[in-house]
Image (cartoon, rainbow, N blue to C red; front, side):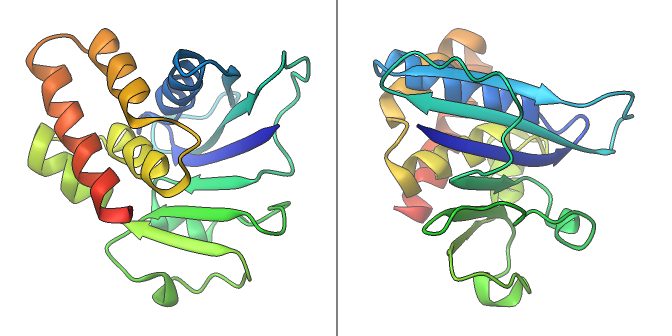
Length: 178
């Protein structure tokens, strides 16, 4: 089983991204679940969402404390939240940032990848909602989620022009980390 923990802020689409990753994995023939963990947090408050992927049925419904992968939607959270907590050895951290991984002040031997998903979202969507761009970057960085499956889910979730704009964001972020 592979487990993903997403750190974001309320309103950034963390829950949607967890669900999209799970649906895309399911499209690719895997068992998957995507779910949030939040209480009374308000817009902009730090939240977590989770995705689990496996080739067999997943019965664990608890939050992800020992992720294989961490996705950080807002780099300001790096100073507020211990995003590396529980990260498994050999894991990977994907951060939405224009900075290089060496400039993030994250102390880990695990791989750190950065992509400026906010700029990609602004370019293609005209809004700083970067969840689909980050999902595309995750697909490119890991090959756990097939890009074609992710695109299929996004087009179903966001039909028409909005879907095509999100696909463009996915493709650009995917290529930047590939």
